[in-house]
Amino acid sequence: MAAPKEPVWNIDPHTRAKHAILRRYLQAWMPILARGRFPEVMYFDGFAGPGRYSDGEEGSPIIALRAARNQHIGPEVKLRFVFIEKNSSRADNLKKTIKNFDIPENFRIEIGHGEEFEEAFNRILLSYGAKGLPPTFAFVDPFGWSGVPFSIIKKIMQYQHCEVLINFMYEEVNRFIGHQDQVNNFDRFFGTRKWQAGIRLSRANERSRFFHNIYLGQLRKGANARFARSFQMRNQNDAVDYYLFHATNHIRGLARMKEAMWKVDESGEFSFSDATDPDQLVLFEKEPRYEILRNQILRRFTGRVASVGEVEEFVLAETAFRERHYKVQVLKPLELAARPIIEPVGSPPNRKRGTYGDRSLRLRFRSILP
Ligand SMILES: C[S@@+](CC[C@H](N)C(=O)[O-])C[C@H]1O[C@@H](n2cnc3c(N)ncnc32)[C@H](O)[C@@H]1O
Image 1 (cartoon, rainbow, N blue to C red):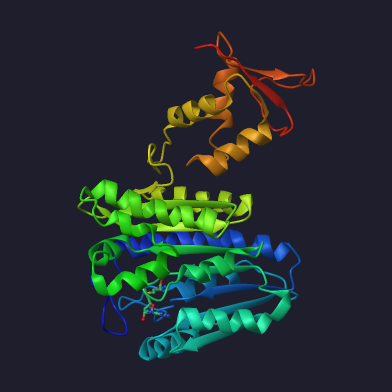
Image 2: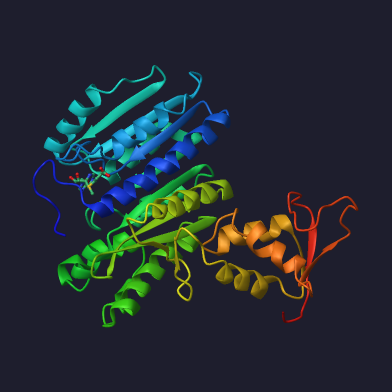
């Protein structure tokens, strides 16, 4: 889809999916941070848009404001909302939309009218001086790739409590990536020149995977994000439309993002999948495919002793699954099997078999085939 020229445009179903994820995630993220007793928390929308679509649907700034307002965050926490929009008519629209919004006392809203993401971010970062950014959620939602330098993503991720959700518009990227006049823009977007080797790949899956992996690698190694995962949305022709990349330094952030992703798919309206592991594209379906998780857990832990907490961290950080997927559906059948594959090590005598509430409980994964 070409980027719309008019100030306000029609929402498409894939944007709706993205919004549902953003909404759900912020509803969980805002209260977590508010409880963390930080004096200030920031939502930074680098590509804010007009605030409303032509059919009345709310845009990301309003979604964020509403998500925060509904959480009844105490007045002692200051919530700073920064909305950056380069296009003046869209910024005007956004301003008007926000005027009709009932704004709590502790919200501070700024619209970077006609400003670009990069300069706005640098300006704000500078304003915090040596103390650096407060806990920040940055939503980076461009139409394409220009104006999204990786150097900025890296700057955000250097702060422990900051995270990013990036809409990687693969379809657009793919259309322009061979164009000579875009080489510098793509160098800046990826923050490396390694992407250039992907131009000659002609098979669609191989190509999308290649560019995806470069970006994921950059988040993990270039920006040093402790956790980075990607989620894929395919279009009606079953081609990759966009990837959402989420980078965070907190496992709870990762857990909440996965929850948001899995729930979006429950509607059955969209086809979302975890795209992080090239060998294992896991679709977010109503009934997760537990056998995939079971195999991943066994591959990792067979022949070893690990605590429930370690298994959980593995599930969250290295598989597409959620923390609620591995106990009843995977560990329990492994323990209760006629020939048990896992057995607790030194568990208290009153422990009920097949329960894993105690994260320090150690489990031996036996080297036998079922
Ligand atoms: C995909 S739309 C954003 C939609 C919005 N985030 C939402 O979910 O409702 C991208 C927006 O970024 C604006 N834009 C494009 N380049 C920009 C830049 N370098 N800095 C800030 N805004 C930019 C466009 O005018 C457009 O309104």
